[in-house]
Amino acid sequence: MSKRFFLVALTAASIAAFAQQPKKNRTSPTGYDDTPVLPGQKWKVHDIARPRPHVITPGAKPGDPPSDAIVLFNGKDFSHWQEGGGKDKPAPAIVAWKLENGYMECNLDGGSIFTKEKFGDMQLHIEWAAPAQIDGTSQWRGNSGILLMNRYEIQVLDSWNNPTYADGQAAAIYGFYPPLVNASRKPGEWQAYDIVFEAPVFAGEKLVKPAFATVFHNGVLMHNRKEIGGRMAHKVVGTYAPHAAEEPLGLQNHDTYVRYRNIWVRRLQGYDQP
Image 1 (cartoon, rainbow, N blue to C red):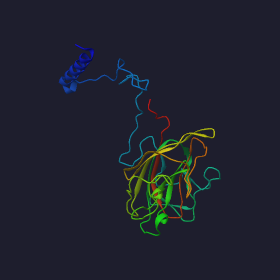
Image 2: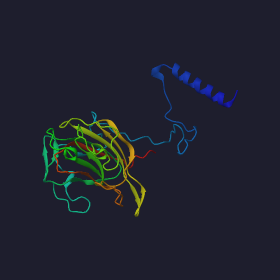
Image 3: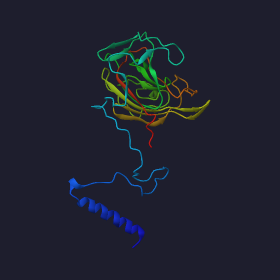
Image 4: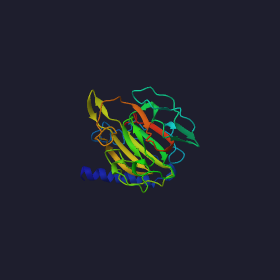
């Protein structure tokens, strides 16, 4: 009998013996130390010594923050946010954004707002709504933006029956890539983005790794780990410039009314696959 055939027969016999055990008596080892090493890893198959993932509590329903999330806006206050300023200027308190009925809304005369905390790699959930009353066309309908690291934009726009340039519609990586599909809801209805963002890496003045984004709009995939070509820019190609490993998250005020609610983020540093 060949060694290979013997191993296959032994595995089949083990599975059969396990299946014959009464269900209440079934036990299984918590790992092994005599299995082959996985290619490209330091761990063996089913390695008993491999660290197990952190335990967290998921949200009670879809869209709710898990236990390890930082809730940036819960509908009650602006405690995690500041208006204007950004990376180089003083950051005054928020005066131009309205807070009511569990959401915040940018006003026409205000500036963009930014988180007081800074982030690099992250998972972001954010819900938004364009005005129910249509006013304007193309880029003047419910225009805002999610500014990752205050530079890289996932477009917010009322894209329901609203033609505009493809790399500037809702869920686009602004100025670089249109979304795979248009999954926009009607004006006035709440919409959701779920974004996984990988921050760029610099070595001095040199870009070592570009940024990447995975984006879901209303549960539909828009970008699957798509490389971001550079900072947000209008009518020119956005480029990279060195910056810190963590920067604020921004919500753009584009002189149109847009509402936001239920914003939370998970830092992904420290969750690398062991």
